[in-house]
Length: 552
Image 1 (tube, rainbow, N blue to C red):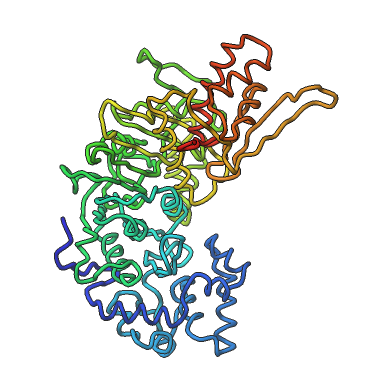
Image 2 (image 1 turned 135 degrees about the vertical axis):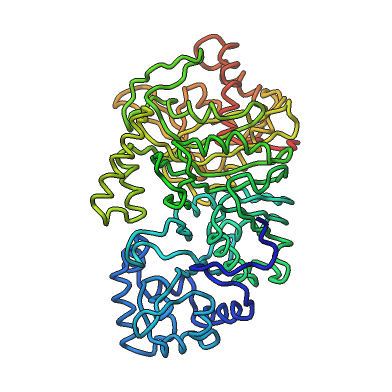
């Protein structure tokens, strides 16, 4: 269903058909200085950090003291209402929202009666980044803000995963973009900065209602015309790629419902947590997306998404037979995790998978049971926990990988300059990491058909060298290059390679440097020079050295 027609009111979701009322709310939020920095200042470091861990008691104490002292303005009321699950009487809300009023908040379906006062029906919090100025994001209240398990059609706000994706998406200007599983619409805020037209899909009509509310509440900052929203953003109801079948996009972005959940013959669609579970067994939802996304990519188009994948004790061998890798959770062989993702990639598609974490089945189950507050019913929790472990055991799953991936449909089918790359990078990255991903893709593309000997190279600005040797040793036993920015990789060098890198100062070609270094070290000079030129690909594509353009 394309929702560019008049948007119907969805029960238990924000109402967005009264733009004047939305603008009044935006004015009230601005007047109260309801922004990230102001909230952090009000709460103080310790309470604000606790709130980031979903611990609201310290922040409640701060807000209660501020309200008791008086003269603190509307901000404590807004923080208590939207972030802390506190109830307020009508007169307090009238003062805090002079333009919107209690009646307006009720019409927008943002508050609900609670005894003699009102409490929030949604979470509404400030958000800002280096791409998007001060905005506000409405989503469902979390388990720490309301009693009982989450709704099965729960709509997430800005969590760690959505922030990770936003920091990884390469912000190249494009004509048409697609977001699969938009949720509350946070990725749209970023996409609007560099995409002319966006289609956003979701299987939940409540999620689309939240996304539309957030776009229209923030239309001034986002630069969209509320009367012509569909000219920039089309909201469509449907599962995965179904709503866009037959269309092509320059960019696809998705934080899909990739959480691996046990399936049962008796389960009902309404029992699934749709924000995280696509209703498919194992990691088959991610597999289907990796296989099918090229169908909706224009030539040269790219897709970026987050995902989970299963790491199994039985991996497929080259001859199609199964063999057992001796592997326990947390101790997988270096390339064991690649088996599944590698098998999903369609011929003629370029891909870059970066595994950021590996979780044991027990920890994975505990994480997602805790996420929905399912532990509050101990009997149901234990039954669900057993289902998780049995499900993983049935498929010989030793661990679950989490990471990000990039796909590209080549502009020319017979030219795949990037190819396939699988990396495991579990240490902290510099954020946003997108500019570094883009630089390494462009560096890899630039090598296609080039003679490595003719390249003129220079060591990247953030790279340092580290040497280790035993006391009294004449030469170092270990030489490392370390990146201080971006993906912050470390690579091991041999002595000849270290000499070659040290000589990369932008003056001479790689071929000249390789010959010069080879003449100074022991061994076959021709073979050493060839090996040094072969290492150029790794050094360039991983960003340790960069090419000097237009030398001379």
